[in-house]
Length: 208
Image 1 (cartoon, rainbow, N blue to C red):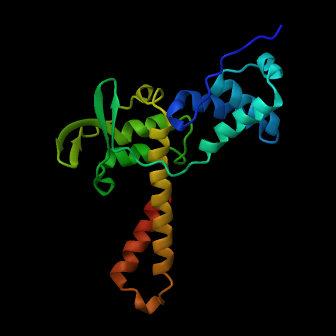
Image 2 (image 1 turned 90 degrees about the vertical axis):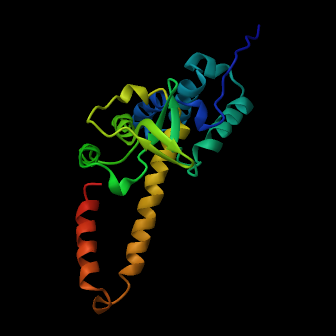
């Protein structure tokens, strides 16, 4: 007698929380050279299909499930969401990174790298803070006071997290590209004041 099972298949990063993503990431690292095991882990963590149920799925259904998930997992064009809602409270992304407080900058640079890992929720807690004022397309957020509540960001979906992450990825690529283009000029063409800025910028970029 055939047994039917109901499968809840995610179709976008909006269907996956950071907590679930980190759990999946942790296990995937143990099977880097085993594609079949990695696919099984994807189906288990994201669709709730255990090993016993996986054996009963037809090859066609298995490939359809795999293709559905992989179709959105390669999307790296998710936009930065400047204002998000957490438990009915609006949180705004740091509106001006060049004016970020020294304390916020120092706390972010304590982490070895900017990556979606166990520290990412803490970084998000520094970057997103409660909105205090809004006017047209501008807003102001609560000043950084050193308090980090990463538990607020674990239930948020990955479209929000990847939006913030890819913002920094694209920003760093643009910065590197602009710097390389500028440095194609000869040494004599670069004013002394600009040289000093580039040196200081390079020193600051290392911890980031």
